[in-house]
Amino acid sequence: LIKASGALSLGSADVLNVSLSHIQEDDDGDEKRLGILFAMTGIGCLIGPIATEKIADLRNTRVMICASIIGIAFMTTSFALISLADSIQMNFPHFPILPLLCADSGGSFKFAFVCFCTFLRGVGSSIMWVNSTLLLQVRILHTHTYIYSFNI
Image (cartoon, one colour):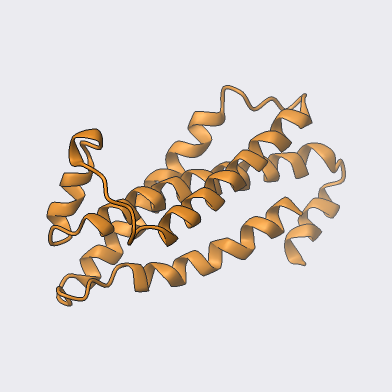
């Protein structure tokens, strides 16, 4: 059930990246911004499992379930923040990385904020995916049943 919940949002997020990479005043940089969004997802997917490796314990499945739920919470929060990107105004001194992203995106603060939220979504989706996969491996003793679950 955890994997199915995450998979519903994973596919839609990639489709949304195309529309989020478009800035009305700068049509020429859409491809570059789309690449930046996918890179932020990739960096988040790399950092997520590394960050939770210390707390994930294969002997304690409750901790792994909690980690998976925290991953879903990260994904939900990032989608909520992306939906509010037009109305959020922040100062750059509080977020030192955002001006670097704005420089690559034609100076758009909204795109830099979307990049940050996309990074959070990558962190959450990788935490959810890795921990739920480990849960399947620990809870299901028969390899054939585990492999069958991926074919459904």
